[in-house]
Length: 410
Image (tube, rainbow, N blue to C red; front, side, top):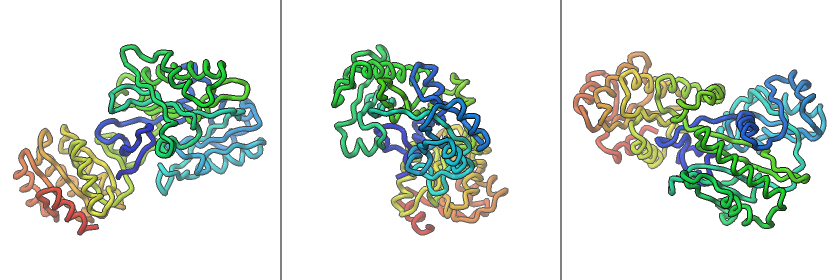
């Protein structure tokens, strides 16, 4: 199973929504700015990217207490030390200094973690009750779905696994949109049912979350926790948004929010050539074409007792240069112990793939075993190009042989 990304209640899906949904993540502070413009209350906060900016930020952030939050594209920050609640200004400065410039490692970032380049300093909130509120597209019903739970502040996957009765859902007909009675369906199933003022606040936030979801072409909007305060307000204490990359052509303002510092350098290289590349934690580099074949290839690698080092779908429209650059990117990953090329030639012909691999090999020395399985359009020509290239490669006829060859190499 490939590294899991926090995406929805039904999150047993692979990193980056492989082959189906590529996403652009926003930072918490960016999502909260969008929330505020949409009428969703959030704590007052200031972003800092250097320790000497903390004193100025403290002048406009109310406290005590204050909350110092690392701004990285990963969940589970609190457990990893990326969220600190402090009660004096000195501790705010210490917390910020201890985070800035340091790697933060969570379940989602992997062992090396992500460098913290900025932190958000916010007002503390007098919390009376916590909720989870999220919105995704339900693949089973193909409808936008509001997800609500009284188990706010907890990892929602764990809640869904252990106490699924606490997970409440409302599917939304795109024609009618979000309707007030649907908010009632969720709120009145809480135990205990909130007071009237809190109910009104929850209904307003739900309606605005739906608007944010649609207007920004989101794949996810998540507030965890959404809190009711002791003075009767409803506030989004946390915020997470991911945007469908396929819709960015009509979301020009959101493109400006993309943070390249949060991306793997190899993934940034792949973006330049329109390659669907995701770096993973394994030792077998893979180049495939098509989402279905990609998933089957990942399974084959796992079944062979190895782990995929990347996901690289060159797609049907790849040219020789894209193939060459993709192969070069795989070779740059020092963790790779073997490379598997699994191509079914359709729109992407096998001879084009072969020429791209040979072109890359001329500029980069291949230090690891190369396993190739080619089938489809111009397969014989593709095999001939590889054979005459003087490259040392292992040829597999089917997926069973692919698994056997992978197992031998790693």
